[in-house]
Structures are given as C-alpha cells and as structure tokens.
Length: 147
Image 1 (tube, rainbow, N blue to C red):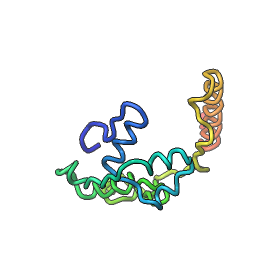
Image 2: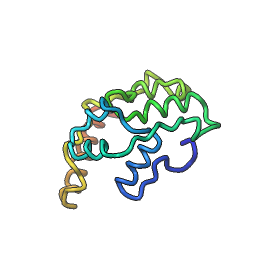
Image 3: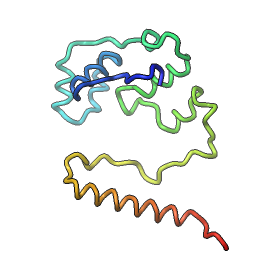
C-alpha cells in the first residue's frame, strides 16, 4: 500500500515471522499471553529482543494518518488491535467511508477448521455449500422484479 511491495516478505512461516518481529519488535509478556499454542509462545520467548522500528523510518514520505492506521492494524496482540469498524472509520480512510453503507457480517468468522488439511474433494464440497448459502441469502434480500 505504501511502497508497492510486501512489508513482510518471508520465504517460509518462520522467516516471515522474523520479518514481522524485525519491524513490530518483540511482543511484551502481556501480548505473549494471548498466544494459545505453547510451542509458539516458547519460540517467541526464546528469541532475542528486537526493538520496534518507527514507521517513519520505513515510510518517510507517508501521510501521518496512513502510518497511524498501519500501526493500529499491525498490533501484535489481537485484543489491542483496531477493529474493522474502527479501521474503516479511521481519518485516513474518511474519503471512502460511508457509515450508512458498511455491511456487517451476521456472525464472526471462525478459524476452527484448517482448510489446508482437508482433502481436495471436501474443500470443493465446502466451497459449493458456501456458494449455495450465499445465493440463498442474496435471493432473500433481493426483491422479485415485476415484468
């Protein structure tokens, strides 16, 4: 968005995590506590301390509002991170924001199922089912056209 290149270009998940920590800095103890996976938490605790890199150092010509939004979106702890609603209403996005036209999901997205572990056929089936549900909801919301 600000440089037309990935901010965290990792070759694999550990490399990408190191890129993230190299910019966001090491998470504090409170932020580490939000990590449920003990192995992941232990790994992060085993790493040497890294200070946070100021966004102005990475993007010296960027708008201050853009950097503020970036900082709020890329907060390590999800409980401290800006919400989608607040991000859309952020001053940096004000020219695109219309509070009357901001649809909200009926229910939160759940990450309970790891899709990369599913067989190809099961994944196809789930995509088909989701498409059917989407079309049903769309049909229910769209008034019938009169000829």
